[in-house]
Length: 120
Image 1 (tube, rainbow, N blue to C red):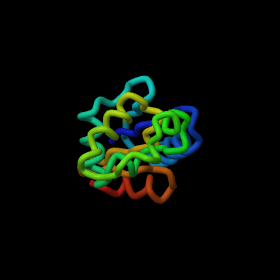
Image 2 (spheres, one colour; image 1 turned 45 degrees about the horizontal axis):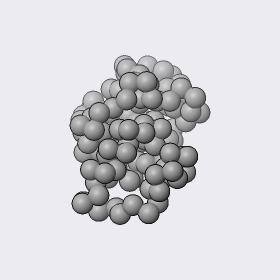
Image 3 (spheres, one colour; image 1 turned 180 degrees about the vertical axis):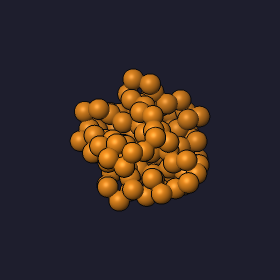
Image 4 (cartoon, rainbow, N blue to C red; image 1 turned 120 degrees about the vertical axis):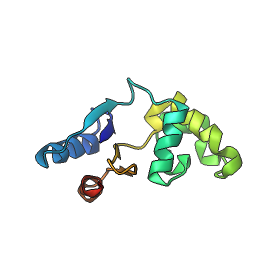
């Protein structure tokens, strides 16, 4: 199991605390320092069953600067979104937990983190 975090994010810290409390075996990826490649973002999206716009923090200054709210949300625009996430990792929703069963969750709630822990 791996968790993508921003250590300045309270939701990330809460998820890590819960993983620790549950005795989970996981690795931490500080994704702002160890930026995911476009291929890694695509793989996580497949594991999440989501599209890139579903995990984009549209209120971030970078999102506003790029005008993301006006970008199309369709198959033709998918790669544009993936590229934006790779080039501006602050736009990636957090924390993302990749579960041992090959799926992933956005662990913004305790329930979502617990869900990741049950996936075997």
